[in-house]
Length: 220
Image 1 (spheres, rainbow, N blue to C red):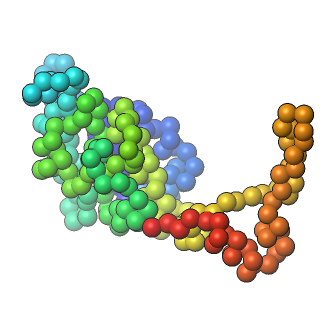
Image 2 (cartoon, rainbow, N blue to C red):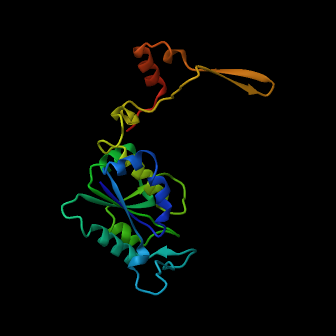
Image 3 (tube, helix red, strand yellow):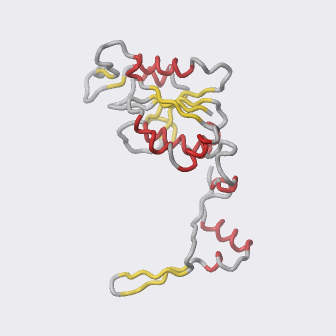
Protein backbone atom coordinates (compact mmCIF):
# COMPACT_ATOMS: atom_id res chain seq x y z
CA UNK A 1 0.00 0.00 0.00
CA UNK A 2 1.06 3.58 -0.71
CA UNK A 3 -0.21 6.43 1.45
CA UNK A 4 0.20 10.05 0.38
CA UNK A 5 -0.23 12.90 2.87
CA UNK A 6 -1.11 16.27 1.37
CA UNK A 7 -0.14 18.75 4.06
CA UNK A 8 1.62 22.09 4.52
CA UNK A 9 3.31 20.55 7.60
CA UNK A 10 4.94 17.33 6.32
CA UNK A 11 7.35 17.15 9.26
CA UNK A 12 4.38 16.61 11.59
CA UNK A 13 4.17 12.96 10.47
CA UNK A 14 7.69 11.61 10.58
CA UNK A 15 8.15 10.88 14.29
CA UNK A 16 5.03 8.72 14.65
CA UNK A 17 5.53 6.89 11.36
CA UNK A 18 9.03 5.86 12.45
CA UNK A 19 7.77 3.92 15.45
CA UNK A 20 6.20 0.56 16.37
CA UNK A 21 3.93 -1.40 14.02
CA UNK A 22 3.91 1.26 11.32
CA UNK A 23 7.71 1.35 11.20
CA UNK A 24 7.93 -2.44 10.98
CA UNK A 25 5.38 -2.44 8.15
CA UNK A 26 7.54 0.09 6.29
CA UNK A 27 10.66 -2.00 6.85
CA UNK A 28 8.85 -5.05 5.45
CA UNK A 29 7.87 -2.88 2.43
CA UNK A 30 4.20 -3.52 3.12
CA UNK A 31 3.46 0.21 3.12
CA UNK A 32 5.21 3.36 1.96
CA UNK A 33 4.50 6.99 2.72
CA UNK A 34 4.92 10.13 0.68
CA UNK A 35 4.49 13.76 1.72
CA UNK A 36 3.15 16.29 -0.75
CA UNK A 37 3.20 19.97 0.17
CA UNK A 38 0.55 22.12 -1.57
CA UNK A 39 2.96 25.06 -1.38
CA UNK A 40 5.00 23.33 -4.08
CA UNK A 41 2.04 23.75 -6.44
CA UNK A 42 1.58 27.50 -6.09
CA UNK A 43 2.67 30.13 -8.60
CA UNK A 44 3.29 33.22 -6.44
CA UNK A 45 6.51 34.17 -4.68
CA UNK A 46 5.00 33.68 -1.22
CA UNK A 47 3.68 30.16 -2.02
CA UNK A 48 0.21 31.16 -0.82
CA UNK A 49 -2.18 28.29 -0.15
CA UNK A 50 -4.99 30.19 1.56
CA UNK A 51 -7.38 33.07 0.99
CA UNK A 52 -10.13 35.06 2.67
CA UNK A 53 -13.54 33.36 2.68
CA UNK A 54 -16.16 34.68 0.26
CA UNK A 55 -19.03 36.16 2.24
CA UNK A 56 -16.71 37.30 5.01
CA UNK A 57 -15.92 35.74 8.35
CA UNK A 58 -12.87 35.02 10.49
CA UNK A 59 -9.78 33.12 9.43
CA UNK A 60 -8.56 31.89 6.10
CA UNK A 61 -9.60 29.07 3.78
CA UNK A 62 -7.28 26.69 1.93
CA UNK A 63 -7.48 27.32 -1.80
CA UNK A 64 -8.75 24.70 -4.22
CA UNK A 65 -6.00 25.09 -6.85
CA UNK A 66 -2.92 23.95 -4.86
CA UNK A 67 -4.85 21.01 -3.44
CA UNK A 68 -6.23 19.98 -6.83
CA UNK A 69 -2.71 20.04 -8.29
CA UNK A 70 -1.36 18.09 -5.31
CA UNK A 71 -3.97 15.36 -5.79
CA UNK A 72 -3.30 15.25 -9.53
CA UNK A 73 0.40 14.79 -8.80
CA UNK A 74 -0.35 11.99 -6.33
CA UNK A 75 -2.51 10.19 -8.89
CA UNK A 76 -0.17 10.73 -11.84
CA UNK A 77 1.78 7.49 -11.51
CA UNK A 78 -0.99 5.32 -10.17
CA UNK A 79 -1.35 3.19 -13.36
CA UNK A 80 -3.79 0.41 -12.44
CA UNK A 81 -3.77 1.12 -8.72
CA UNK A 82 -7.02 1.29 -6.79
CA UNK A 83 -6.80 4.73 -5.20
CA UNK A 84 -9.01 6.64 -2.76
CA UNK A 85 -8.81 10.38 -2.05
CA UNK A 86 -9.95 11.33 1.44
CA UNK A 87 -10.55 14.76 2.96
CA UNK A 88 -10.75 15.11 6.74
CA UNK A 89 -13.62 17.30 7.86
CA UNK A 90 -16.00 17.76 10.80
CA UNK A 91 -18.83 17.17 8.34
CA UNK A 92 -17.37 13.87 7.25
CA UNK A 93 -18.58 10.38 8.04
CA UNK A 94 -17.41 9.13 11.45
CA UNK A 95 -14.43 6.83 10.93
CA UNK A 96 -14.90 3.27 12.19
CA UNK A 97 -13.14 -0.10 12.26
CA UNK A 98 -15.26 -1.09 9.28
CA UNK A 99 -13.78 1.84 7.35
CA UNK A 100 -10.27 0.76 8.35
CA UNK A 101 -10.87 -2.67 6.86
CA UNK A 102 -12.44 -1.18 3.73
CA UNK A 103 -9.61 1.27 3.11
CA UNK A 104 -6.95 -1.40 3.65
CA UNK A 105 -8.05 -3.01 0.38
CA UNK A 106 -6.89 -0.03 -1.70
CA UNK A 107 -3.46 0.20 -3.32
CA UNK A 108 -3.10 3.92 -2.62
CA UNK A 109 -4.70 6.29 -0.13
CA UNK A 110 -4.40 10.05 -0.55
CA UNK A 111 -5.15 12.04 2.59
CA UNK A 112 -5.93 15.76 2.27
CA UNK A 113 -5.06 17.51 5.54
CA UNK A 114 -6.82 20.84 5.85
CA UNK A 115 -5.77 23.79 7.99
CA UNK A 116 -7.03 27.23 8.99
CA UNK A 117 -10.84 27.58 8.84
CA UNK A 118 -11.18 24.68 6.41
CA UNK A 119 -10.81 23.78 2.76
CA UNK A 120 -12.61 25.25 -0.25
CA UNK A 121 -15.81 23.20 -0.57
CA UNK A 122 -15.02 22.38 -4.22
CA UNK A 123 -12.35 20.00 -2.91
CA UNK A 124 -14.98 18.00 -0.99
CA UNK A 125 -17.48 18.01 -3.86
CA UNK A 126 -15.28 17.44 -6.89
CA UNK A 127 -11.80 16.22 -5.88
CA UNK A 128 -12.06 14.01 -2.80
CA UNK A 129 -13.82 10.65 -3.03
CA UNK A 130 -15.11 10.95 0.53
CA UNK A 131 -14.93 12.98 3.74
CA UNK A 132 -14.04 11.39 7.07
CA UNK A 133 -14.10 12.63 10.66
CA UNK A 134 -12.50 11.01 13.70
CA UNK A 135 -14.81 12.71 16.19
CA UNK A 136 -17.02 15.65 17.07
CA UNK A 137 -14.27 18.01 18.19
CA UNK A 138 -12.09 20.62 16.52
CA UNK A 139 -8.40 20.04 15.79
CA UNK A 140 -5.86 22.46 14.35
CA UNK A 141 -5.59 20.47 11.13
CA UNK A 142 -6.04 17.16 9.36
CA UNK A 143 -2.62 15.76 10.18
CA UNK A 144 -3.67 13.97 13.37
CA UNK A 145 -6.78 12.40 11.77
CA UNK A 146 -4.58 11.24 8.88
CA UNK A 147 -2.20 9.55 11.32
CA UNK A 148 -5.07 7.93 13.23
CA UNK A 149 -6.59 6.51 10.06
CA UNK A 150 -3.19 5.39 8.73
CA UNK A 151 -2.43 3.47 11.92
CA UNK A 152 -5.84 1.77 11.93
CA UNK A 153 -5.54 0.86 8.23
CA UNK A 154 -1.95 -0.42 8.35
CA UNK A 155 -2.90 -2.95 11.04
CA UNK A 156 -5.15 -4.65 8.46
CA UNK A 157 -2.45 -5.07 5.83
CA UNK A 158 -1.54 -8.78 5.73
CA UNK A 159 1.80 -9.30 7.45
CA UNK A 160 1.84 -5.97 9.31
CA UNK A 161 1.13 -7.59 12.68
CA UNK A 162 3.29 -10.30 14.16
CA UNK A 163 0.22 -12.29 15.20
CA UNK A 164 -3.08 -12.02 13.40
CA UNK A 165 -4.85 -12.51 16.73
CA UNK A 166 -3.39 -9.18 17.81
CA UNK A 167 -6.21 -7.57 15.87
CA UNK A 168 -8.57 -6.58 18.67
CA UNK A 169 -11.52 -6.55 16.33
CA UNK A 170 -11.33 -10.32 15.88
CA UNK A 171 -12.79 -10.89 19.36
CA UNK A 172 -13.52 -7.36 20.51
CA UNK A 173 -11.80 -5.05 22.97
CA UNK A 174 -11.85 -6.19 26.60
CA UNK A 175 -10.04 -5.26 29.84
CA UNK A 176 -6.55 -6.78 30.09
CA UNK A 177 -4.25 -7.49 33.04
CA UNK A 178 -0.70 -8.75 33.61
CA UNK A 179 1.66 -9.40 36.55
CA UNK A 180 1.47 -9.01 39.48
CA UNK A 181 -1.87 -10.64 40.32
CA UNK A 182 -2.20 -8.36 43.37
CA UNK A 183 -0.96 -4.76 43.42
CA UNK A 184 -1.11 -2.65 46.58
CA UNK A 185 -1.60 1.11 46.49
CA UNK A 186 -2.09 3.71 49.20
CA UNK A 187 -5.27 5.79 49.10
CA UNK A 188 -4.85 8.47 51.78
CA UNK A 189 -4.07 6.63 55.04
CA UNK A 190 -5.46 3.35 53.77
CA UNK A 191 -3.94 0.65 51.63
CA UNK A 192 -5.89 -1.06 48.88
CA UNK A 193 -5.17 -4.33 47.15
CA UNK A 194 -6.01 -4.29 43.44
CA UNK A 195 -6.58 -7.84 42.23
CA UNK A 196 -6.77 -9.42 38.82
CA UNK A 197 -10.22 -11.03 38.29
CA UNK A 198 -10.16 -14.64 39.43
CA UNK A 199 -11.67 -15.82 36.13
CA UNK A 200 -8.46 -14.86 34.34
CA UNK A 201 -6.18 -16.72 36.72
CA UNK A 202 -7.63 -20.22 36.86
CA UNK A 203 -6.57 -21.38 33.39
CA UNK A 204 -10.14 -22.31 32.38
CA UNK A 205 -10.35 -21.01 28.81
CA UNK A 206 -14.13 -21.29 28.67
CA UNK A 207 -14.45 -19.10 31.75
CA UNK A 208 -11.84 -16.68 30.41
CA UNK A 209 -13.67 -16.31 27.10
CA UNK A 210 -16.99 -15.87 28.90
CA UNK A 211 -15.49 -13.15 31.12
CA UNK A 212 -14.04 -11.33 28.12
CA UNK A 213 -17.34 -11.61 26.29
CA UNK A 214 -19.18 -10.13 29.26
CA UNK A 215 -16.81 -7.24 29.87
CA UNK A 216 -15.67 -6.51 26.31
CA UNK A 217 -16.88 -4.31 23.52
CA UNK A 218 -17.52 -5.69 20.07
CA UNK A 219 -16.01 -3.87 17.11
CA UNK A 220 -18.02 -3.05 14.02
